[in-house]
Structures are given as structure tokens and as C-alpha cells.
Amino acid sequence: MSQTSWEDVVELPDELSDETAEELRTDAAEVQDMTGEVCPYPQVEAKKAIAGLDQGDLLVQETDHVPSTENVPKAVDDDADAKVWKSGDGFYRIFLHKR
Image 1 (tube, rainbow, N blue to C red):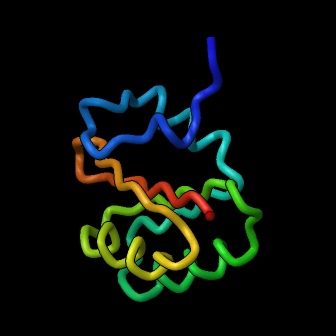
Image 2 (cartoon, rainbow, N blue to C red; image 1 turned 120 degrees about the horizontal axis):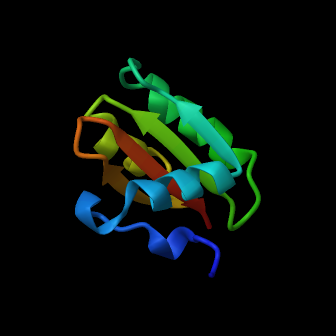
């Protein structure tokens, strides 16, 4: 069985199993729990974290704040590729892959 990787992240929650999402979270270089936090705090923390990661590292930011799913990827656009995954119950994971 191959290891879960960045390429396994997709945009639709029914295409990414909870198990795969959890494996990616476990293997991430850093995980930020931004549940309950509102913009701009998640963007600021994502930018700081991305700056400290090595190329190819994965940062996972967990949130329940819908605007963060758009604002965080925009904030790190110069330094990381982003994919947003929704669990189906109002919980999101923003996967940020440092370029």
C-alpha cells in the first residue's frame, strides 16, 4: 500500500475519505487548529508557518470559518499551493503544500 500524499487531496469531500484526510493530517509537517478563529488571524498564522517550512512540506489548517477557505489560500498564493476539503459537517481542512 502506498503512502498518502498531497496528490490525494481533492476538492470534493465525497472523493476524499475521512481516513485519507486523517492520514494526510498525521503526516503533515504542521497542523494548525483555527476552529473558532476568524480572519485575518488564520491568514497571518498560515503565512508564518509556510515561511518556516521546507519546500514540499504540507501544512494543514483546520477551520470552521468559511471565509478562511478562500482567504487563507489567497494569502499564501505566492508560496504554497492550496486545496480545501470540506468534511461534510461544516468542518474544513485547508491543505497548503509549500512550493
